[in-house]
View 1 (cartoon, protein in one colour):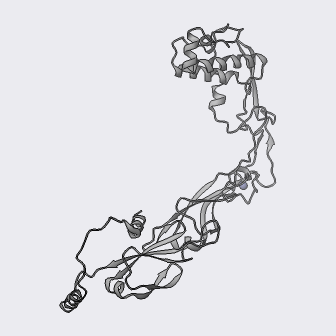
View 2 (tube, rainbow, N blue to C red; view 1 turned 60 degrees about the vertical axis):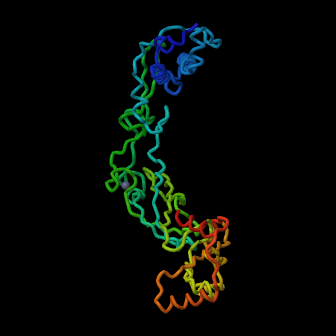
View 3 (spheres, rainbow, N blue to C red; view 1 turned 120 degrees about the vertical axis):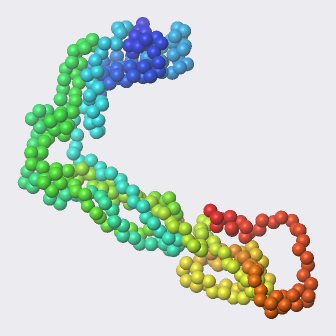
Length: 371
Ligand code: ZN
């Protein structure tokens, strides 16, 4: 019966890191993608099973006490002597290479992220923007072929178009055939004898492009709008990535947002609060007439229907909600003071008195404003 420690070529007191390292080294050598042989496949299973057991602290403890019922039978050689000949293959970062076939020069372009600054007015109705983006576009000279016009890629002499170089290595397991990307053509299977001089054989060039977009109403800070296919073109004319617009809405001096509603404070002088008045206020889309009733109180809320934000989904606009704050004059000239004193005699106002604590709508609104 194969001992798991021997299979991985580690000591019985090996640390989890040592076990992981040993497994990775062996897996690179024995993985079926690299090593299609029958023997290698069996060894790979053995090594993987040993790792499954020894990498789990509970299972490892049980195994050390002799309790691993599922241990494989068969080959029990120590594998510690293997060289790292395949390290270069996995460590080299071949970029999506699969064994046995050449890779394509055409790849999808990267996504791009652009930030867009809006103000609250833009959000109420939506806005059209032309946005400048630094990106990659198709090379007009070669149309993405990467070759000087009139020339073509030629089959690589070294790998004969497969993009791969096979090597046979003798090991304890017998002859092992491995393949590596051809270094002459970087795995493409072809070379380009005359690269396009405009794009240096990349098939694309850097450019500044203008993207026109209708930003819908109701967006908010942090929202990302996706424009499929508006990112950069891929290498060798590969498909475009996507463009993302990330929205930032600047705080407004007067209005703040609560869902689809807009909030503001209306400061009303004590005199107007007593007598009532009418006022014209500037909303984000024109003026609105408001009646202030006689006797209005701080914290009263006035709602102007349909003057809020058009939601991102749906077309029912929110409301404009105005919280009243009654402003008490802090300076009176002697004449005005005498008049108020006259009024006080006449009204005999009730002295200040305690009542139940009541946060009231206005303080709730204020809380929202402070966010
Ligand atoms: Zn070109």
